[in-house]
Length: 385
Image (cartoon, rainbow, N blue to C red; front, side, top):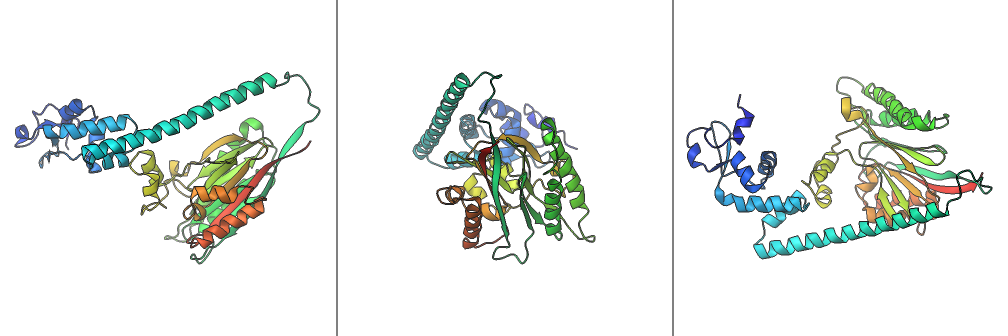
């Protein structure tokens, strides 16, 4: 078996002709300030191929003339440029490359300025709120409570022969599950049914997330047992919000999504557990490239999978009056851009949760309806105590 560490040596090892091959991967890494691990990745991505690979040992050797490109890659990565953009810049002539880098950095500065202004706004708001807040012991006579107004709808779409999605909306629970496999429909139903046992329960504030995890773990076991026969398969995504009276406890696994519309801005509060999302996170794909990637529906995590692949994300979200939440299967987000989702979700376009749900499902079907589409929309409203 080849010793992996020896590939980073000083050039004395290797098969015939090693002396004439140029720089070993270790020497090249030191010269260009890229790690050997990064160089292997860039080799796999065809971004920075070695000049020669020894046919006997598999050692990589680089030519001194490759240092200029390697250093450019290293510098571009240090300014935070994604790999897909680095590939584009490296393929350009120097003048065009400079223009592309300037444009990229202008976008970074603009985004940073927006975040800086938002941070300043939040500091001012919280400082003012702290100064204006009454003493902790002062009783409030005008106490109000928050509650949810909600609507849910699921549609088969225009292509699929059956609907494997499940949705639920109630006073204490919002949920969307997207089943797959030969027992996809029972799988999604089982996941949502398991969570409904928590809707009316008296939940200790400090134990909500643990109870969610335990319930989803039980649901995962149920899903695993649903496959019919040796060739049967069963799995499902699950995205749900459990209402605690002032907060929403989130549980999420797969590529169904949850969004928050607050003060006109649309924020995604879940992270897709898919192959393409992992490639975006690593800088190997842009969101635009991911939209047409052949593996965009391939899940890394779902209920019905084994081990860590069945572990959900959880979290708590403070609710404010006027908030509007959307939970949806990928039958919506795979065909409708987030900008269009925000427009359809806006109360100016859809006054009630039911109006919003119907508009979103209709939009997905008008875009071809290639998949089952399910949506839950809920508004956080104030009521008298």
